[in-house]
Amino acid sequence: MNEIVHTHGLSKRYGEMLSVNNVDLLVKEGRIYGFLGPNGAGKSTTLKMLLDLVRPTNGEIDIFGKRFHRKNRIEILKNIGSLIESPSYYGHLTARENLRIFQIMLNVPDANIDEVLKIVRLDKQQTKKISAYSLGMKQRLGLASAILSFPKLLILDEPTNGLDPAGIQEIRELICSFPKQYGMSVIVSSHLLSEIDQMAEDVGVIANGKMLFQGSLSALHGMDNSKSLEEIFLELTGSEESL
Amino acid sequence: MKELLKCEFLKTRKRYILLTALAITTADLCWVLYGNYSEDALAKGWMMFLYQLPLVNAIFMPLLSIVTASRLCDLEHRGVMLKQLCYISSRGRLYDAKLLYGLGIIMISLSVQFISVFIGGKILGFGGVFPAKLYFPYWLFTIVPTIAVYIVQHSLSLLIKNQAIPFFIGVIGEFCGIFSMFLSQLPLLRKLLIWGWFGALQFVGSDWDRETRIANYYLLDIDWIFFTITVIVTAALYFIGRKLFCESEV
Image 1 (cartoon, rainbow over the protein chains, first blue to last red):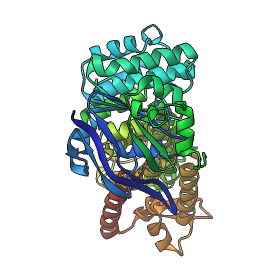
Image 2: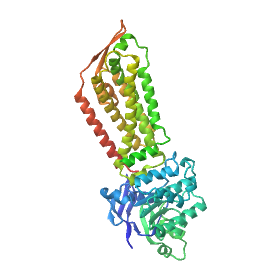
Image 3: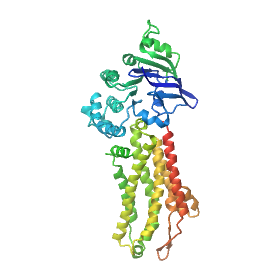
Image 4: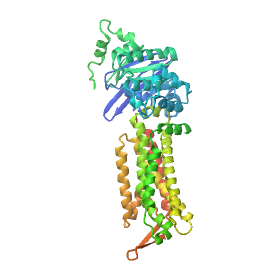
């Protein structure tokens, strides 16, 4: 199976604090990779480095088998969709108008707007201003923007934040369908174990900037069959303080 | 770049940014054109405007730049859009597109001001032929400082999320620029401040006779070397602002 993302000794330092410490992330093609960690573990910083929103202090990134550098960044990044931390939007515009801006920038067909609105079930709310949306609806719009170009790689940071239980279930099913239906590989970060447990095939556990475990979800479960995933997770990260 | 400019247009729909800029220009024009013109003032009207306009521009052009740049950039900060846009497109192109769009609004406002001053002068009945040869350098000496001020505001507004900070920097700069025009003993001060360039490039002086209450206007030497420096500094401000934005983290 091809590697979609492979980082080598990825580190990020803010002053004295090492936010991400020598992380080797490995994401395989067509899989859902769950990136688990307590709050402040370095998940978002790592994902931001993959998107060139934050520059690594050390380390290298390979995406789609290519070494990531300034000259090929746009060529690589145009095949990635993302939703980092919170959805991005222009509050005074409607969902359709927001997506139209991304559609022009990404140079993708107009028809994609209708398709993604239908996928995230915002098609009936598309003429409403985003400022009048609930947080859950904004989250759906963020997801719609992320998949607008039907990218090869989807990076989702806490995608179910703000959603009601039905919404969480729906988005979870949606994310699980992306690899098979659209051939996407997905990196999804969360601090909620149950969420990752129900979505991911491969898992990375990070705490205090260090990758503590990386492998298949079954291998994580198999570390101690007598314990729940929560207990295993706490055992792995237990000595690390959550921020 | 065409696509990015189109996106800028789409983003600013329902935000009335051009309308706001034109409202500021209208206030500027009211200040310039309103007055009780004596026969002598009408006879020297075109020269009087060349003397007065740099001061009015030093007040209104930085204000126009602060408001326009801040409103354009606040769109991105409010919706946390930069973290989405900065990986879809090159940061340099994003910086350029927003700058060009903002400068487009500023240029429309300036054009309205120039045309209105010309029409206003004609309607008021200014004497003599319109001195196009003098208004051309005035046009140049207004546009370059305005672009420089706009680039500073644009860069600050893009780099700083809290728009109160670029606003206060702009307002403080503007006040310093205006006051530098009244400190004739410190001609270097207005040259050092980009907000003072409107006054530093002024090439019409005035003698006001207290007894007759008549003002006479005369031409000063145009400092083309200083003008060249302002063009170079403006280009440098653009490159510095662009580099800072390209290297910033989201």
